[in-house]
Length: 349
Image (cartoon, one colour):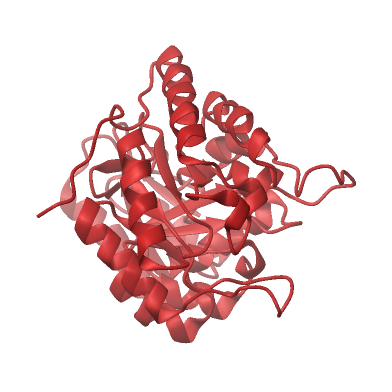
């Protein structure tokens, strides 16, 4: 349930409501201050009498049951969009934030070359996989800690924040020491032990949708992170499995406006995994922006034909620059922005 406070109520009234909730075993209060109203969410297993008790407290306008099984991710608890600051980027606002880089970190030269290229084109975050979940155990599975070090070196040279995937709860602390944003991949969207672990962090987490995860289950997965105390969650649509075999997955563009209606959390799109084909990445990227995506996750490689993973869906530097031009044009047409303009980037001294 949520407690809607009266407009202009005293701060002590809000504090009294929070205290009344949290003196009950198993209940927590989540305070959300919006432009129009202040709401106190009741998190945990409630009981019928609690509604009557809360309605009697000073400053309370109404107590409303939450209809959704997810609470903290719901628009009912928080009306205003969540906005996260990562480096120079604000994720969740009017800006389209592009995170770009190689699927897998292969060596230091590859990562630095790609980081310089994507920043020059206007990307604001560097992506790269150090630990790679692969369908086949014989495929390249990443460089591990060495890959994290290469990403950190690229950040030093370019100033780009880094996003990389974490696969196990045991690796969360390690990856968090190198990464600015942690990614939970599609295969781990319901790895609840891992979700609990990143919920203890105070760093942004990108939570990808699973191959066959309904919207409600996806939002419930985000609830694990939010309930752990980490309110910096970004959702990412990366395609679902359907009967179609031409594309790697089917990018569900409808998820973007649906999630924006149901939740205050930012939502991105990953057209690289959503299609599996490089020539479909740009069209689906601009379509995602038109649908309202707060950001894009794009795979870029110096030489996709020689990539150790996902070369078929990776863009060359030139194609990425063209994609960014199109993304800016669509964003501008909608009254939005898409990162800084393309420019030449010098390594930081």
